Length: 314
Image 1 (cartoon, rainbow, N blue to C red):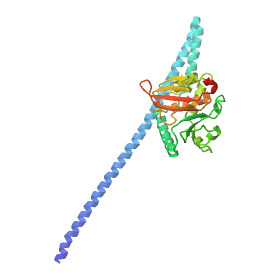
Image 2 (cartoon, helix red, strand yellow; image 1 turned 90 degrees about the vertical axis):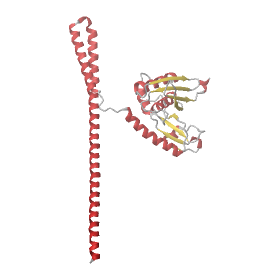
Image 3 (cartoon, helix red, strand yellow; image 1 turned 45 degrees about the vertical axis):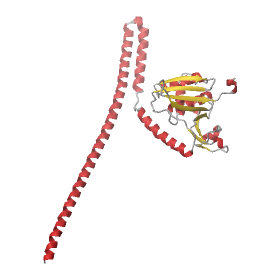
């Protein structure tokens, strides 16, 4: 009996201990659940607030455009009304009124419905260039970047094309244009092997050609100026671009400041790609592009080189 009496308190104590542990575990589990629920609610609120801010920003931008359109319309109406009252300056006021109304219509109906910041484009490009870098490393390709025209530069804008060739060997030969249609260039000649990519600047060049008044120049000086204007004024990919061209040496140097898409020395950056593609199509010759860090005059220096024809050298 004494042994049974002694074992009974121990059993009771064990039961109490187990109950206490279970209660503590349930309490900790409830606390973790509450924290997760609170965190999920906070994340949901932040997402809703982010969406609200985006809608508010887009609405504010559209409102600015609509206000500008309204102001131009009012100016146009006042000018036309003034033309009726003041016959001595009627021609000027009518021209001013017509211009104001026309600008108002354009501002109202051409208001952008969606705004994409440069940071978003930078994120997309950074992800793409990371994949390109890994692919080039896996294939063991060189650092040479050669932009090759694959269609006649004087052809229709929709028919223009160029490819970015990255050779496998340091000593390479430019592949035939028909061999550049494939991603991997695998020819019988080992010196022609490598990879061919669609340049980022191809579509930019087509758009730039439509925006440029007149035809794309076939002289290095004028062509470089046109491309620089497209980078800064048409696409706003950089704050400024200074050019220096040596046609006798087959070289063009472009200093870029304030790149909208970050570091230009990455693979096929839009700014460098536009110059490489533009020179290749404008001069109808393969063009190598090198990008280095600049100095106090520019953030980055883009150097484009091409081989001269025999008559050009003479």
